[in-house]
Image 1 (cartoon, rainbow, N blue to C red):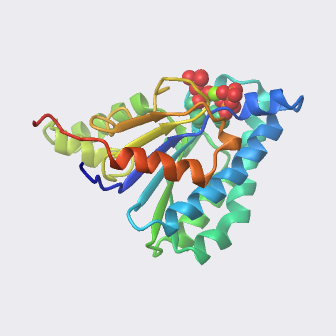
Image 2 (image 1 turned 45 degrees about the horizontal axis):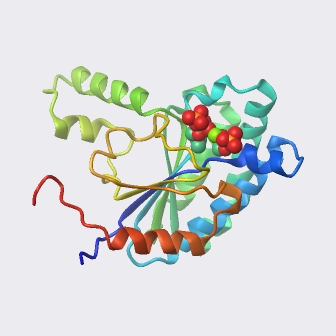
Image 3 (image 1 turned 180 degrees about the horizontal axis):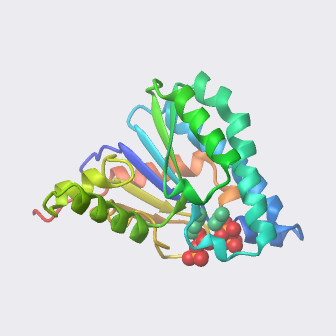
Length: 227
Ligand code: IPE
Ligand code: IPE
Ligand code: MG
């Protein structure tokens, strides 16, 4: 049986709203509970020997369609999360980065994002990448435009290098909440990813379940087109 390495893990953190609804709570409570889980899972990944990069889908280019109240709440929550978690990044040697088009965010939020990026830039146990105002189609279009602007040839390598962050391709993509779709996440980087869909709602997701999923992944046979 093959023992796959898991260098880059990506997660579509879905189900916050349904988690809250089930408890008769406002959807915002689900997002708050979800942010707590982000901390636990990030810490777990920082301590994990193999995992070097963790990419988390936090806000999509389509999520602006949500009621203004919820969008505002999410913006505030991201800012609050970053402020609060800087010690977590420092104590666990975690570098923080983002993918997505930050230009639509408030100056306040952009400043906070840049502050945490700058403070953590030399950390090396794990890179946690938050996908913020992220859409894979948007990222690919921006990358191709960058290649053309630099008068380079459109090649797989040049497009890969022009993506928001030239991080490695995704080994394992997990989506919580039972939805079996990709929702415009990392379309380029998942060309040969393994997928895992769990019914668990994101606020109920635990490092124990993650460990089980990693075990499942390790025992899969990845062929990359070969035999
Ligand atoms: C995921 O949870 C978090 C974001 C998209 C910001 P949802 O808010 O999509 O939760 P459900 O899917 O409505 O339950
Ligand atoms: C995907 O979840 C985006 C994030 C988790 C940030 P959505 O809840 O927005 O996706 P759909 O609308 O169910 O496809
Ligand atoms: Mg959802």
